[in-house]
Image (cartoon, rainbow, N blue to C red; front, side, top):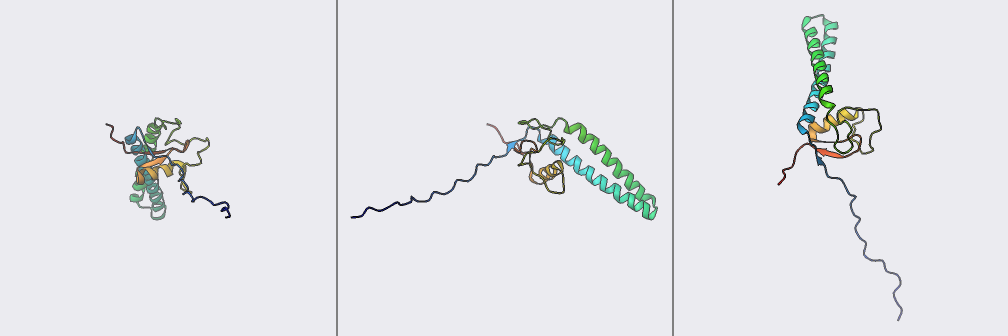
Length: 148
C-alpha cells in the first residue's frame, strides 16, 4: 500500500492587523473650544473677504461693516486660539495638538489633502469627536469613559 504524499493542512485564516483603539484625551473641553474658535476664525475671514469685495464693487457702507466685523472676529478668535492651544499637548509624545510645528509628521497622521494637519484635525474633532496626533499618530477620542 502506498503512503499518501504531502498533504497541506487546512488553511488558517489570516489574522487581522492590530489596530490601536482610541485613547481618551485628558482635556476634551479645551480642545473642543479651540476647534470651535478656529472654525469661527475661518468664517470671520470669509465674511471679511465677502464684505471687502462687496464694498469695492458697490461702495455701500453695509459691506464695510461686514468686512470690519469679519476682521474683528478673525482677530479675536485667532488670539484666543494662540493662547489656548499652547497648553494642549499630546500626553504620549508631548507635541502640540493644535499648534503646528515644522517637524516631520507621523505616517498615520490624518490629513485632508488641500488642508493642513491642524485644519484636518479640527474637521475630525467636530464631525467624529476624535483625532489623530500629527506627531505620533495615536488616535484620541473626546468622550471620557466612566471609571469604576
